[in-house]
Every structure is written in C-alpha cells, then in structure tokens.
Length: 410
Ligand code: ATP
Ligand code: MG
Image (cartoon, rainbow, N blue to C red):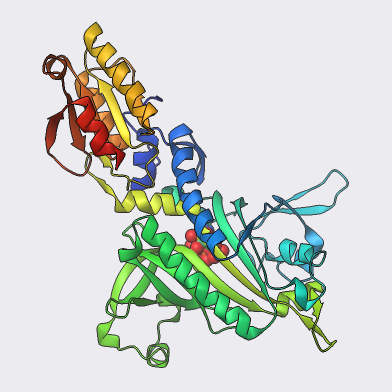
C-alpha cells in the first residue's frame, strides 16, 4: 500500500485534488498536470471499462490515435489557427516541420478513414479511443477537472446520411445516460443545450451539478434537461418549449460533449463514398467526448465528506480496506489469513500492512474511501470475529470470517 499524506501542496485549492493527493491516488507534477499512482490508475481504469462496455454496446470499435499530429491536416480545416483554437501546444521536428500535440482528433481520424471508406458498404463506422489530450489551458485551478494533460474518451461516428447520423446521435445520448448512471452521477447530470458549430445550432453537453464546476446551467428538473448560460436567451427558452420560471440556475461541470459536424470536415479533408446511385457524397461526422479524468474529479467532489473520499462501489479501486491493528502476532496472522480468504473469493482488498498507529489507519481508511473497512484487532481475534464498517455508515458490526465473505460476495 502506498503512503497517505498529511497535506496537499499549498497551491492546490481544489477539493478533488487535495483529497486525491492526500489519499495517494495522484501526484501533482505541476499546475494542471497530474500523474496517476497505482490507486488512481485503478479508478481511471474502472471508469474506462464502464465507458468501454457502453461504447462497444453501440457498435464502437476501439483504436488509438497518435499524440503527435501533422500540421497540414489542421491547416486544411482552419483549425491550426491559434485564434480559432486557443489551447494548442505546438512543437517542431528537427527538420523544422510543425507538429501539434493532440487536443482532439477529428482531423486525423477523418483523414485516416479515407483508407477505409470508399463505398456506401463501408459505412456506418464508429471508432473511439481513450487518449491523453494536451491543452494549453489558461487557468488550471480545478484540480483534475481542468488539466493541461488529461484522459478523454472520444468517439467519432461516420454515417451515410443525415438521418442515420441523427439516429446514432440519439443512441449516444442514451448511452451517455447509462454511463453516468453506472458511475453514480445520473441523478445530478443533465443533457444540456450548448453552443453548436457552423452546422447545428446546438451541441449537447452532459453537465453534472457540482460546486467546483466552471459552467453555469439552467436546469428544468421535471424535464431532465438544461440550457448552458452561453446560449441562455428568451428566444432559446421558447424555442426549446421550456418555461423560464421552471429553470433553476446551477453550477455544473461538463463531463461529456456531443457534437455534429455534418459533412464539412469530410469535404475539407476529402472523405467521400460512392453511393448506390453511383454519385459521390461526403461522409457525415459526429464527435462525442467524455472527460474520463475530469469525471473522476467530479465523482470525488460529489462523493466525499469531511473525512475523505466515499467511492461508489463500481468505481472504487478495491472493495475492502483491511487493517490489522497493533503488532500482536496472533492479530497479524488472523489478518493475513483473512486477506488470503477474501482474495481467493475474488473480493479485492487493499491490505494496510504499513506500520502505523491504529488511529492513523482508521483515518486513512476514511480518507481513501473504499466501500468497506475490515479491522482485525486483539479484541476481535479474542472473539473469533472481525469488525466490519461500510464507508457510508457510522455503524460497526462484529462478524465471523464466513459471515464477512457471504456479505461481501454479493
Ligand atoms: P470545456 O468547455 O470544459 O473547456 P470543452 O468543451 O473544450 O471543455 P471538449 O473539447 O468537448 O471540451 O472535450 C470533451 C470532454 O473532455 C469535455 O466534455 C470534458 O469532460 C473533457 N475536458 C475538456 N477539457 C478538459 C480539460 N482541460 N481537463 C480535463 N477534462 C477536459
Ligand atoms: Mg464545452
């Protein structure tokens, strides 16, 4: 087990990063740049796995694109321009050629698709990746919620027709609800009308109510929908059939964003297909992001108390925190045996085998926030039992090893 810390760096003001640093999940390299330690990586992987399963369920095929990007592709769509895209990190090859560090992937994926799409038979195609994005953000004060280097899931849909595209777009909306439900946030996450591109009037963001969020949204609870402040006008409210009096202002964090690009990018980059009637048509593009590491930060913001993090069970890096209190040989042996038993039963355990005072171990258990805490002490051993406590409850119970297994196995 890695060590916890008494304090987070003095310049770290965000609750999510303070807790994650103290509990040993992440390491702050510099402002907006964090490393993921063994515990943190497990959380990232758990979130990714949920997203991956839901992406696969709607026909997504996983791939991974490059972090270095050719300038020419972005020149052909105007998005190399620093005025238009103000978060580029750019660098040069030894021969002087400009390259960009990936902040998004519409251009490279669309260009690559030219090798795979030539006929209507090759479509639709849905590809996604988990990729480290680099963005030269002006401010990075929200811990892992706004980073200069972060993990994003980005899905790209290539469709034959506008109609097919719209159908798939709706499918992704439903899929996103499932994802946010599985990570425990659906009850505070709203599909939100936000500014669109040249092609559609709106894009859809998924916004999670969160005090540490950087967005302001107006929520219609009953209709389970919201409008981002950036497009919040009387005209838009009326257009969406909403009522100003039903809308409540909230702070929120954008955890996902889905976007229609129409055929513009395909036309700029030359991605066409031969249709049934022999005519050539540009492919319709949709782009669908989820901020995987931002989502982790939002989960910490949403699920924590004054003692530490309270991980939802399917996100937690382990199910059980096991601590042996005291140096007694009998206690150590009982705890070792219990650890083996739990592992053998397929229950994941973080075994606190560090030398520390009992009080510190119990504090660490609360800080790290695994769903269950199991304590073996001289007292529990003398009764042939262990002490069980759920992180989200104050109640402790004494149970036998078999009772514990039966309870945790479900
Ligand atoms: P924002 O409005 O918060 O700057 P964006 O609109 O630029 O985000 P997209 O380009 O749509 O974001 O990226 C897809 C998703 O990636 C976002 O919905 C968000 O969850 C996440 N994301 C974007 N920027 C960052 C960042 N700097 N750090 C962490 N996650 C981010
Ligand atoms: Mg946005």
